[in-house]
Length: 103
Image 1 (cartoon, rainbow, N blue to C red):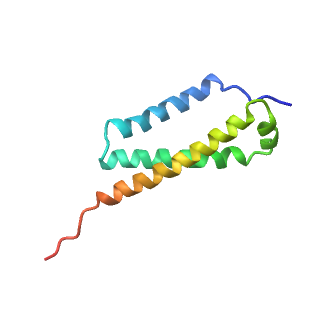
Image 2 (image 1 turned 90 degrees about the horizontal axis):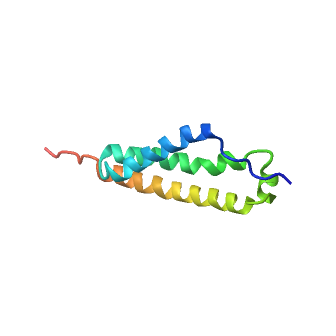
């Protein structure tokens, strides 16, 4: 059986700035349109991770490898958190809409 491959240093160049951007949207600009849009994009990316990783042809080998259950469980939790984040971001954006003026 093959073990799950280690993350290379080049992956950090994508992962850490993305996580920093999502944290910026949640902590620095909450309840603003830009914060909700950042959270929406981050939620969509998180929601796509299980689909991205589960469509590979070696998913059975990964799931049976050492740490495979933890990897699969983490992906499912990431997708669930992403879906919840998308729902909350859309709800927040919906609450910011400008009401129509009555004349």
